[in-house]
Every structure is written in structure tokens, then in C-alpha cells.
Image (cartoon, rainbow, N blue to C red):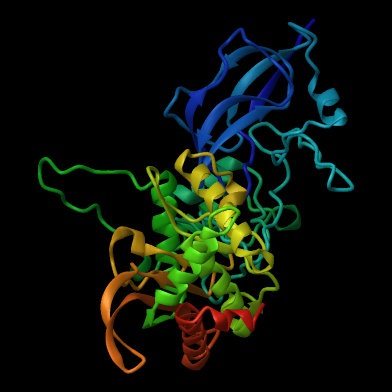
Length: 441
């Protein structure tokens, strides 16, 4: 007799607690194989195709397209042992399910695999901790200084219902001390926090009165994640901005010479990224993050360079890993690959996390300058305006040159103005005279 297995919405990683069903890829009665994608969901970070760890016949689907489900909610049921020789879940896991999701499948890069917890309505043990440098697109509000919050790692809560209760009521799980085994946060802990009197400054805001005909747009999904992240950045980071105009004529001439030679074309963004990594090698304090719980500045060994990309879903920041070890050609190729994935909505959550420094080319919007908000928990962001012909004094003579405005927004806790100014001046010098960069290569 077939065994009916229930597949629940897995933990997609990086603290995500819900996802919206965008498109079903299977129908009731379809035969599915192990690791076959069954549904496309949208998280606060990316569009994700969710693979099922069971093989068999789909007997039920839960949720219509457009429905938002919490992690741990049922997605489909599969009759294992029916149809064309599907693999049962136990066999699929032991034989190496290729698509690894938290709580399902296997991962041969680790010596041991995680075990599923047989608990109704709950997922497997808490998600793998992200490094303190990881950029999470959905972040919990900052813990109060006196709260018993954790420095890093996953919040000790398993139940998605507890997460949802906390999220719906604005309770910061990281500020709670769990009463369960090994500090596990239970529903009773969240309810106790809700009963506690809240300071007047933190009282829930009353709904804004809107005139008739006004349109209300829910702050959820990517837009909600961006709103929360930008708000957290402004709450926590004492930022400052400095800027300088630079003559980019020689940089543009160097790029034209490179692209005239044989080989792949190199973008302006790639050259600016290479200049950034050289500048960060000189001023490593800007490639860091602040650990509030430990009261420490954490300088990071690698540059994982984020870059702002505008898409139909909104602004996203894909991350180029180990940018400091890439050539302009490699950087250009990676920017192109990630930009295309962003435009088609196929970026994985891993492509949007872990950044340590962001390069923001807002010049593509036809503007000269900006004071961008730092991509929390990073320490700095370099902004680049449009490159435009302007009158400029060159070698003692007034001439028309290609001028760009560069701005650096930085966390004043990690460095003083001298380091920030030195970084920006070095970037400007490399833009004005690319030969300066050769000294760092």
C-alpha cells in the first residue's frame, strides 16, 4: 500500500519565515520524482523553486497561487510507492537528495546530515547560523542593550507558529530568553512578552488616516524586507557621507583600449569594483561590521561585493564573492550573470546575502549624487553618479572632461573621517589616473 507523505514548506535559510506561492509546477495526480521542483515561491529575497524530497503521486496541494504560507505549513502530500517506482523519503535522503533545503535532503559537504524532527507543525532544528558578516535581507529589529540577546546564530525557536506570533505582534525574538530546553523560545515566552507593559515610545502606531480613493500597498515580501532593513540601518548605524568629483576621462579611455583588444568586454562597473577592492586593501576598516552584542568591530578577511540592481520586483543587491581575487574581466562576467538572474527573478537567497561592502551605481538613473543608506550590517557604501562632460581644469587649462561624482557613506563607529577620506581619495586618484591602480596589483 502506498504511504502518504506530507511535504511542508521548508526553511529556505537566512531567517526566512514565510513565502508566497507564485506558481504550482505540479497538479494533483501528477507523478513526481525525488528532488523535482513542485512549486515556485517568492520570499523576501528571491523567487525559489522548491524541490520535493519524496517521489510518488501528488494527492493534494495546499494553498492557491498568491497565498502566503509560514515555514512548516503543508505544501503537498505525496503517495510514496504509487506510480512509476518513486523513492520513499527515507531512501531519497540516504541516497543523496541533491537539492538541499533546511530540514530536507542531504549535503555531502558536511560529515553528518541533519535529522528531521517528528513534531507536528514544526520544522527541523533551527536553521544553520549565518556568519556575523552575512547580509540578511530580512533582519530582526536590534535588541535592547540590556536584553539577553544572542550575538549571532539562529534564534532558538523551532515552531513557525511562534515565529509568526512574534512577527505579527512586533516581538523581537532575539531579545527573549527562552524557557524551554536549552533556551528554546516557546509560545508562552512570546505571550509573556506581549503582556509586559511596553514603553510609550514603542507603542504601536495608530493607522494613518487616508482620504477616499487612496491606495494602500502592503509592505510585505521584497518591499517589506527592504523597508525593514533600511529602517534598521538608520536606527543602528551612525552614518556620515563624504564626496568628491573626479575626472574619469583617463578611466574611460583605458576601458576603451581594453575593449578594443581581443577578449570579453569589460564594464565600467567592473573597473570601479576593482578599484574598490584595491582601496579596501589599504583601508580594511571599511570592510567590517559591528557586533553590538560583543561590543566589537569585526574586520572581515574577504571582500564580498554587493551591487545595487533595479528589477521589476524592486531593488536587490546581488553579491560577488571574493571580489578581491577577481580580475576586471572576471568581475564583469559575474556582474553580467547576476544582473541577468536578478532581471528574470531567479536569484537564489544565497546570491543576496553575505555582502561586506556595496557599490551603488546610481548614475544609470541619470543623477549625479546621492547619500545612500548603508546596507546593514555592512560598514560602508560607495556611490557613483553619472559620468558626464563638464568644464574641468586639466593641466592648467580649462577643458571639457568626463567628470563623475563619487560619494562614500560610512559607519562612523568603524573609522574616523581620515580613513574614510583616504579611501575616497584613493578611489578618485585611480579613476583619474588608472596607472595608480597598477601599484596595488
